[in-house]
Structures are given as structure tokens and as C-alpha cells.
Image (cartoon, rainbow, N blue to C red; front, top):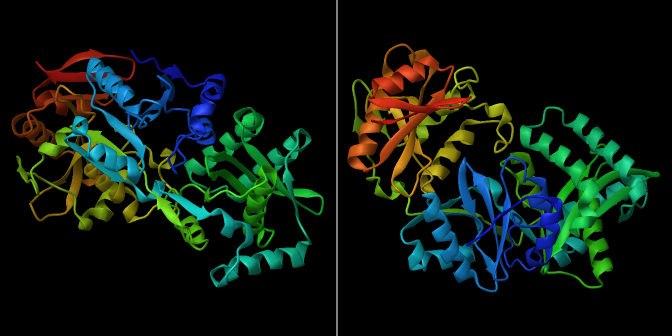
Length: 471
């Protein structure tokens, strides 16, 4: 039987030898990433017959990394048995394209759905090119470095020492001031970087700084996995012109000198959907993009008819369309309307600012393609504008799914939420064969009435929610 150990620094240290042998080019199972993003994800480690896997919560649902090590097939059998005991579907996260092909050709995972979100694809560069920036395509980077040296002199790039820690924290605080309007993910990253600076050596990571005029102006933290340098942190004071390419190339050279030989790749992680960061990372000419797939095995979404249309009492449920982008953005960014949906987009760690009409639409398309949810756009007519959303999600292996529904504020008080909820409920039960359940916040009296009016009954409660099922 598999045993998953909760995240802790000692637990992470114990599995470091296995992590270092991860064949994937994705950053998700690196020591630095696991440390930086473990909070809230309920990360756990499992070693079985010298094979390693991680479990974590993604979208309130349990997911696994694809096992690697001595006996991955044996561990997969154990994972599937483990999920059967918990009555949950098998989901794999951070699946690279090579592993995706293994999954697609493995009868144990037939049928499955999968998708990747471009926001979380890693930028992978040539290590040799990053050291030198040789060639015409790197004219811009060399010009920036030359300008830096002309303005500020030759920089000193070296590994940080214990006595540098206070100055590194001051640098991060100053960086945070420069980016006061940053999105939630960026703010959390700064806080987690401060914590990483306390333990990076224990995790086998490298931290270096760029010093100019006797002060620290940039920090990078990375680790070596196989033939790749993973750079987790790149923070610099932008008042120093050309500092980012100067620090990046200098850090890569420093690692090469320390190891005594070059590596093959540099992974500078994803852009999280930040368009400015995406433009910048593309200008460094990635050798490849490491896409990360979410794979959902035997999801009820496989039963969805193509272009399904559901007619209800004054509402119509359809798939989402590109013309829904503006209305869907409005639905997601109305903080007051989403209060009892349990969502505040300003605190959503998956969102990079500025938010635009693609931000939420791209997410719903991704969830649909991955089979993680069944999303309906609510309309007044088949060709009408979107006025709300109904979602079936949190699937279990016995065919249970949770249903939620929300309507744009200007359409409240007309019974449309009740009609949409009822239509999605009946479709899930009669067309997809699902056992549909629901929950609502204890304070959300309108949702309580909507759910019970649709035939579901309260079966339990806790400090936060009422829970409903068909009697």
C-alpha cells in the first residue's frame, strides 16, 4: 500500500536524490518548485520500490505526478488501486509530451482527456548560448549587457554568502515596492523567495547575486537537474539598465565554472500569462517549450455530446463561444457577485495582470479540454448572449459530480439561476448518468433556496457549507 508523506523540508531533503534524476524538462517536480509552491497544494511525497511520485490538490481535486524511477508501472498500479479505494478518478499533472504518449498508449488509462495551459509552459534555452549570447539573434542582449557595463562598470556576479542575506531581503523588499501593483502570484513569489533564501543550501540549490558599486542589485536562485539548470528566481532592480540579461548570462557562466563543464539546457520556467514577460522570454530564443499536460482518466466529460444544447424553463445551456469573452470576464471580475461562489479574482494565483477578455475564457477552454469540468454558458436563447454559467465538476469514480451555477448580477431576481441549475442537474442525471450533488455557503440563502427547489436536499453541514444530494 502506498504511503504519502506530507511536505516538510526534511521530507523534501530525503527525496532529493530521486528528484535529481527526474527525466522531465518541466520544473514542477524540482526541489525549488516544490518548496516555493507547496502551501495550499497539500503536496505529499511517495517512494515505492525506488520510484517517486508527488500528490497534490489542483482545483480541489487530488492529482499525481507520473511516477519515475525503478518501477513506474508497479507504482501506477498502486496509484490506481489507491484512487479506487478513495472513489476518485486518476489525474496526472505536469505531464510532458513524451510521458503523454506513454499514457495515451497505456490501456490502463483508456479513455482519458488531456490539455495544457500555455501560461504554465516552461521556456527551455540552450545553456551554451545563454553563456555567450553569440550570433546575430542575440544582438539585443549583447547591447544591453554592454550598456550596463558602460553605465555601471564590470559587475561582480558570485554565489551569495550567509552575510549577504540581509541585503538580499532588502533587495526583494525594494523590488516589491517597484511592483506594488503586481498580481497575487507575484506577491506570493516574493514572500516564498525570502523563505527559500533561508533553506536553499539544504535543498542543493544555488543562489547568486550581481553586485555593482558595492551593492546587491540582482539575485538568481537555481538548481541542477540532470543536464539542465533550472532558474527559479530572477529578481533585479530595473533602474539598472540591462541588468536582467547581464545577471542571466552571468549566473549561467557561474554555474558552468562551478561544475567544471557546461550543461545542455537552461529552464527559466513559465510566464504565468504575463504578456510582457512572455515577450521578454521569447526574445531570448527558447530552444523548446516544455508544455505540461493535465490528464484526466475516465472523466464523465467523455460522455458529453458534441455541441450539446440544453433547453430549460426560459434558459438555454450551450458550450462557451468566443463571443462570450466579455460577458464571462464580467461574471468573473464582479467580486461582490462572486462572494458566495467562493471566488475573488484578485486573489487567484493562476492570474497574471492585467486581466483581459482572454484570461477567464482561456481557463474554461482548458478545463473543458482536460475533462476536468463540464461548463455550460447560460443564455436566454440559443443564439443569445451569455448571462451566466453552470458547471459540473469534482468528479468521483462512482459517477458523482458537483454542480454550481452563477448568473450575472443584472439578471438576478428573475428565476434564471434556478432554471439553469435545474436544467444542468437534469442533463447530468439523465443524459450523463451522473449522481449530481451541490453545496453552498451557509450565508447564501438564495443558493440554498435554488438548490432545494431543484429537488436536492440538505444532507450535512459544516462550519462553511451546506451539502445537498438527491434523496
